[in-house]
Length: 474
Image 1 (cartoon, helix red, strand yellow):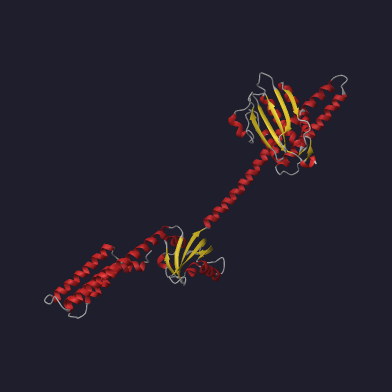
Image 2 (cartoon, helix red, strand yellow):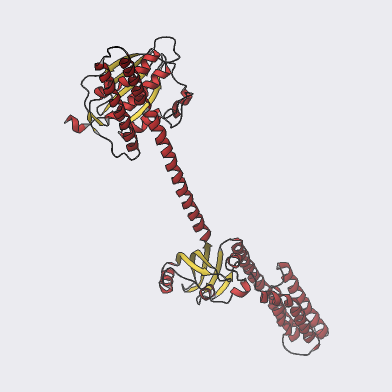
């Protein structure tokens, strides 16, 4: 960018060049001097490169040559040979050589201006300072960021103008710049209006042919907006975390409501039965007593469900202990008997003998079996034929045991398989979509895997595998 003073000078140069060329012509044509006055036209040619393009410089050069020949003809028309002719030839040669050099200088200057224009296109603040930190170039990005126009910034000491606050001592930064030719860091600058701005600054050192430092190119990027964006992002992430916790609490509430439904239903059933027995003549107190004991056991089971589900969120508080998986499955069957009886489902147990112990929370693993079993029972509600539920245990491989729950229902839509274990996904009109999600969470907490598949003959198989408890075997 050209300073205002330079632009003002450039506006008068054509007039000055014209007047100078006129004076040279008058002296050369009408004053008898035994010197090559026309050589002074080279000054006019040099001045022309500041306000003319390539063609204009050639035109000025041609005009100067024509004036040289015309002045020679006016003053020496009657003596075409001799010293005057030699002076004219020297002048023309000087003008031609100067024109050639001037065009080269103009081309180099134009290339530098084009590069400067490219720097002006940058939104970053870019300026160049010499060895004494005096600003020699100042782009539009610097004008926009700091507020000083180029005409005022050029010639000023950069660090004094911007009142720079460095992350380290200026001496150490200068040493690093001299050693590597590059430095990068965050600097606090002061704008023209007195406000502060933090920039990411990158310095590149320019050296001459002898390796001596001559200038430094400094590129500064305003990072205040980025910092504000990072702060906004942090606030958004905190808000998202809060919403996630609220959502997790909602899922936990829905999980507890889903899982305690069965023991609470059992309590109601046993309570109703006990009341009926007490209502008859000669009530069978032994049955009433067993009913009340079972009600207490179911209430304890419901309380245990709440405790275990809360423990799932942190994987702490789980009652991990060696257990016989077959026994755990058999203990879970009574919780499904009411539903199986209501839907006319026959149960088949295929429990492999001699299975090694696993390490797990008995109650939570029983919840998985109950969830998968009840889902199978409800899936067969619309089946007209036999309704059969099979629960099978078997050795999966050398390090895992598998539990499979099979039904004779209609199966499930293959397009839904990817979402079966997602929270709140359900195909039931009155379902909550938590049973399979909870089951997956429990199984994965135990280091196992759970999956679903469709049977070729109809129905579905939901199965999970658990790692063996090596310590329990030894």
